[in-house]
Length: 412
Image (cartoon, rainbow, N blue to C red):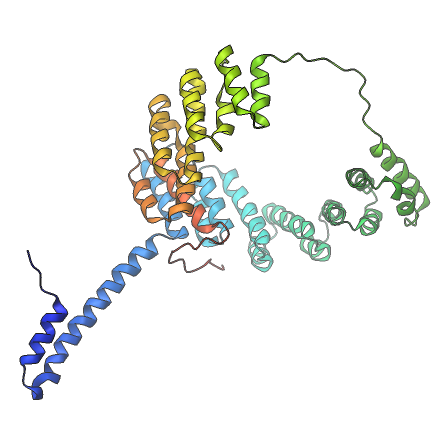
């Protein structure tokens, strides 16, 4: 049926009104148009805001709690995702739902650690101060200090733990950081500040010299140590770590055809691997098919379905489904998920659902995935799917624009 264009009708209507009354006729039209635009904006904004990491993660928590499932299930992973993305209030609320007191205490320490890893050292330390002088505050301070030391801030780390803290553990972490960044002299100075465990850094430094093929620097580095006994110990330890590993015995391993097939798959010789599997009826083929799928998805799936035993078939299907989603073959991923679900049951495929949701969101955006997630057959699948979407939105791949109404992380 023909439907008139409302703007065309309004033009006709305005054309037949007397010019002196046109401006009054514009008022209801403008009001109606403004109201329509406002309603449309509200609907658009509301639908956009629903698909944000914090909203999805809160929905995942509510989904799991409403199901009344025993144990914490995926709420630990939800808590970690909320903390990692900077939604600290939400993370604290989720942690309060943990059933065991030990887990709730762990969450306090973990949240302080993650805040520090996110760069919010002041926020982490403020939270620690609110714990008073409890053992939990001490443990949280130690974790924050270790992150600071790992990031190269030894002075800040020592200030965080204060007097009575494990200074040598902090210095050990800082010394490892110095070695990783090539500051060998700095690491030796750090070792001198560790009277009980400084020698352990010598082993780490020796391993690094060996990996860099810089064993000739031992004498030079030893000369920079002011304590002669420590210099001698350093030389002894590092020269020990630089010794080549001597093979005392050598066992000849005769590989069977199935082991050869695995090796061929590992180096990309899939034609040879497939042939050996078919000729020798190898019991486990998923190792081959998951590698082959990257270059030959159809051939890998055919081989899996034709040659795999029941348990290996389920394992292979579960591994291929996320690979298909990562390739952008969403229909193929969902088909494989349905197949593996028929084999092992809906209660056992939450990991596959999680991976598909994450990959699908990265590829296609969140809207179709959210609808699919809410349609899953049980609470565990729905929860893990929502978590996967939130992970993808919170940690998008480079150069990918994620359309969401995320207002940004919380700061308290």
